[in-house]
Image 1 (cartoon, helix red, strand yellow):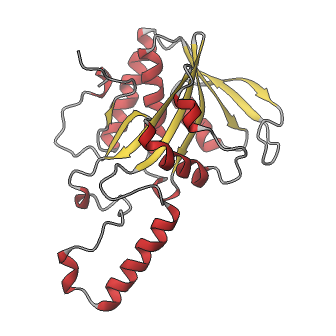
Image 2: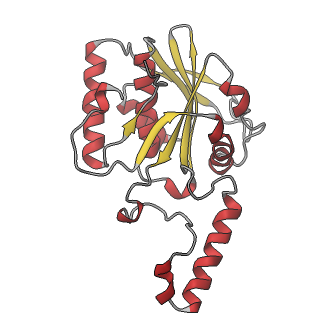
Length: 242
């Protein structure tokens, strides 16, 4: 775990950020389709797993004590013994909701980690380029895009890169403000960058991220984030046993 994520807290960590694995391919593709319905062509995630410069992170729900967090969308677990006291109508409605959910998320099975979002990063020369951040519709507004962003920056620091860069739609002021909070500044414009509507993209880049000044900024932002949200468990780079 990154040193910046080691916070002592009794609060449950509802999400885990970790490197994408082969078992995540189906769910990650579903997240992308949900987050970017007009994207064409879709990302070849299996090929990206074997791309030496690509580093994808997924955001998985931590299901320990899952029923204790009412702010998260419920997962469609099978009926339990506790359903015996409910009315037939309630059980039918619940069953219908589960079937609709399963049609939208066919890759997830009970017992699997549920993937709520992902971020793709390409490490090129001395910079990390964020190619995509996607979060499922029902998980937006929970600060998960910011969690993926800060995890990407942590990974870039651990890989000893110098900058993080990305493109953002010129109309997406919410995302631009988030990136500015993490030190990104506008460095250029890509005309007609987005294929769905030919919208222009702003190029945004961080200052040097290996300086103590930037690392202090990142630590402060993570501390502020985790004071608002439950602390997260983050393993932005693969971990190997000795």
